[in-house]
Amino acid sequence: MAEKKVIEVPGIKTGVLRAGGSGFEHVMNTTVLVNAPARMTMQVPLPKGLLLSIGCVATVAG
Image (cartoon, one colour):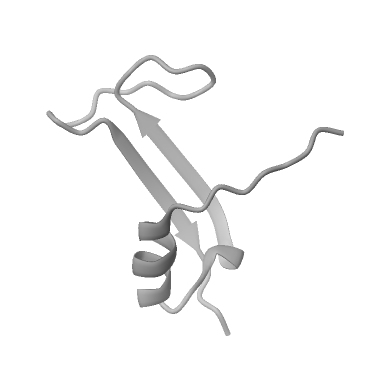
């Protein structure tokens, strides 16, 4: 079985999730959209100047 790696994005972890009373351990779904060709990633048109969009759904701790 291949080794699994967790990549944490500092802004999501410390800003958004903590502010909402949650944390990375409570993430249920993450969607990453890119504006340039990339292998194994959805390519979609994003607003001008935006190269990457990350959406995250997490439960609230407690």
